[in-house]
Amino acid sequence: MKKSNKFLACILGATMLASSVLGGCSNTADTEGAPDYSATEETFRIWSYGQVMDDNYMNKGETYYFYDEDGNKISLQTEERTKWLKDANFNVVFITLFEGSFSKRDADGNTDFSTSEMKAVMDMCHKYGLKTFCHGQEFYSLSNLDNGQSRINEIEAKKLEEQAIKSFKAAKESEYNQVVRDEFTAKFTAEADEKGLTGEDKEKYISDRVTSEAVAAEVDKRITELMGKTVTGNYLEKTYKGDNPNIKGGAPTELEYYIWTTTSSANMYFKTMDDFARYSAHCLVDFKDHPAYMGIRIWDEPGYGRFQACSDVCEAYKLADPDGYVQLNMLPMSSSQSIQNLYCENGAKLGMQQSYAEYLKGYKEYLADSLDYYLYDDYPVLESGVLGTYLRCRQMVSEFCAENGLRKCIVQQSYAGDGSHRLCEYEDMLWQANVSMAFGVKEFSYYTYWPIHNSTANLPDETKYPLTRHGERNPLWWHIKDVNQEILFNAKALWNFEYKGVTYYDSEVLPSGKSFLANVVKNDMEKLTNVTYEVKNQQGGLLLVSELYDEANDQYGYYVVNAGDPYYDSEIVATLTFDKYKNAQIYQSEEITNVALKKNAVTIEVGTGRAAFIMPY
Image: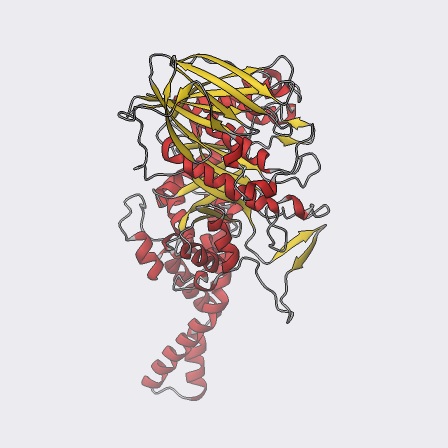
């Protein structure tokens, strides 16, 4: 049975209709000793992925701009649309625009940041309390090296320096030649006058000394001296003589600064990590001092061959800004052999799970020291049903993060513009969020908030994104708003818990089939002793139960999800029995309920895509 569009119901508060605490307990709970997470100050990051901040898009190689009624080019990122991000319960904004001109500074080290589109957007975000990180083009290009190559490469750095010396001299020679010739002419004219020389004798005295060879030698001397001088300027004083002990080596020389400001970051190499860190600080000037600034984004979905370059960029950036955020989005687990070969050497021969396990090991070796999280994207809502690798990938990543003390982050699907993914209804969005929270996710984003810029093919269907290309809200925007609100409500408790394991209970037959349960391992639960369930209005159902643990308060929690494909409407009534508990606190549909257990059990109802978080006490 195809599910109905519940958009109208959701904006009227459908979450209150679909899941509730039922029998098997009473509301006469003893609240003494009940969990209390009301004082939790931290919350989950929720950011919009694919935020389009510039004023154009491409289609089949052609660039198109937006214009106002008077024919003037405009940016779609207005203050009103920025407020929509806050209204939709986002707290961080990913800005896809990073102007390359940040590194093109004048002699005083000034940038054009004060008049840039980037600053205008950051100003609007700051007004509404939104933090920002951006597509850092320099850093993105620097992380684009494959086959284990590094940006710390003394041989390549010396080649770059040699090339720069030639071009530096050429650029300065034309400027200095006339200056030196004029200075020499004035100097030797004065000497000739002091000697009383006139006429041809005077001209010969001057011409004998103001020769091309003499001028060239002086020009070369001055350029050589200039190359070794330290660049001065306000930004240099602030950046290289400030309080950051990680920036070693002082301000750049004129030659080094010339390399920084004239060489494409894609061709940049450094002799040492200290040099790389100093360049990173240069790229962040002004931008990092903005009150909305949070960090940058580097290479997207790197294969194992790029781990070294990404590691270099992360380390250099963190030296320049120890508190800054680097967004590095990893690959999900895939049945594609070509993608498996990106996980590790001979990945396809190892097979899907083993090669992905090697990919996780590579992340730990190269990146975990610089980053405190693991982020990947996996878009499960297909026209053909839920992606078959979705749950097992969740489980593997959750175990990896738990073992290594990493925060688990996820990019969720919020689009259907490619033909293979179905339009995300409210239940699809809530299902993704609840499955993610069950697996311990603490950071969320959505791909993609605006329609994707596509330079080679036809434009996607604009109705299948939260916003249209022209910045109008689709029903999906309201779905995300409500889902984000529920995520942030649950975050009060969930921020304190870490993932321990997961199990599931499924009917013999599921309407969608069972391909997406493939390889999922059922873990033992510490305090959960039994689960029974009944599925309403469907021939079968799937109940996912994860165990989470708050070590500081010795509190167990169980996240219970109606995890069947949300394409099919279903309600599941589940009874959970715990070991030696009398009460339970339940987070469900943005309500907190304390209930007394009967025979150590609680019974709840969870509707399509919905969930409950149960803490026995």
